[in-house]
Length: 351
Image (spheres, rainbow, N blue to C red):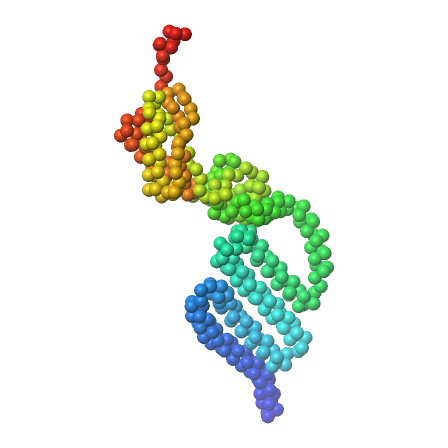
């Protein structure tokens, strides 16, 4: 009986001690997570940068996983599990640890790219394509580290991928052409996220994103146009945000032949200056001007040159300018003639 009790005590100690170590580390981890991250969060609020907030949020979740892994590892060290099984479990824990660290780094880098997109975009435009490439590179590095830690040679794998890559490239020609066209569009910076563009087919709108397959353009009616990257790279595109957002707004008008053109010019420029200063989207420091250019059938035609801060502002500027000019012309007795056909009898008789 005493022998049986001693065996039970011995067996129970083999289970209780590792389990107690695991629970102790887990409890300490929960307490440490609560205390440590609360203090770190309060400290991060006082700093001027947001990168510390990103790091704290990215590591807060996996911290418990790391504590569980540490508890399992410590429990194995104090247990009497065969060494071959312990070796396999340690390898699994190592792989899990590298994967978790890789995921944390992916979250930190992607959130940092989004946060500092305006600064980063000066060197590399920030799109879903560049963010996905960042994730892919970090994951690839993590996988290589895992393979190296497991003692697996990377060279044969890379050779196999090189041979297989040729077959994949032939099968995915369209996909790869869109992918590389997306790289070209992104790095060339001729079309950027946020730009207002007009396609050669007539669609116009804001560039929402440049993906690995297609570029998304949000039109003014709030519809999305998806353009394959390789077609976009070969198309004629008007980018209204390059070289800068400001652009000329041209309004074509005509006045009666009996009009005093000096007076017409003076009145028109007065109204144009008023619009530039008072209408949102106008450029107050710009000096509007007009240019007469055509003796048409029933009027002397000219163009008024205004200026808008960006493309969509030209609609409101034209709207307000035409309303105010029509009212001012009526006040000044300046006639905008209807389309007419007049017969000059005196001229016909001389002919």
